[in-house]
Image (cartoon, rainbow, N blue to C red):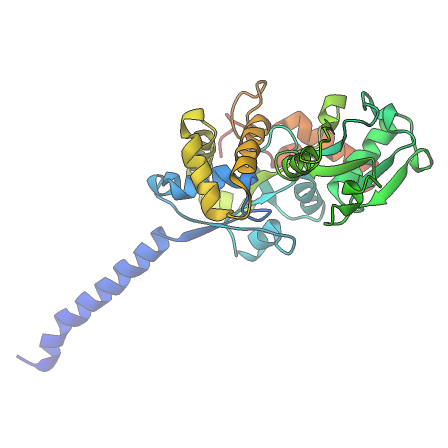
Length: 331
């Protein structure tokens, strides 16, 4: 037998192995899922879905990646660095205004966690009109500025009726009582600020824009139109697994497991605060009036767009409802 005849079966076997390896790599592609912020209680469902095998059982290999100030999930979708991401409604609307074909497949927070905290000894803020004459903390250029200006407009107030204080990452101005109300995430910094002041004998209250008819949608799960069209089955499987993970993480019987996940990824937060943050997150993701975890509030998205359009944050309507995929609509 010639050497070439002996090598032929080996070469065929080698080529077959390469082909199988390539197919396996394609089928088992790692899907990067870029979060908006660092690992904390606000992403408990995402981490729970990863650590307790919800993605794997759906046949997906998902890498949940922390976000942060220098991370832009929508940009990573456009560059192909991520298949899925988390973005706030204003990011989605701005992207659509620029022509980026980003789509929303789930809305994580049914109630926006962005609220304002103030001391209990201060006059109660029952309506936006009660903001008159106060020093209001806002992050200029941030969502909270947009929401606050909407509240002021609702009350017929202007910048001359209040004092807007530029907020940074340093909470010292609030601790020193130089600012009347301070923006925070109700289930994160809100818990820590309330705890710190409580240890000093002070009580706090929270001013929630949603209580006054202002719906500004918070974090949602997004993907690109290209990914959706290329593999709708995979997108559907991802969304279902993610929502199932979130649902499980919020079940009272899974409380210990959810806290263990948070402890693993966020060791800096004291356990007692972590527990309170988890309870607060549950109320925001699954309030009593919500039909389902991940449900998309179409009217809320429309109002968010209307607010941004009125304040000149987008040049023209984007009809954001065309980018939403609520329950019951085929992906």
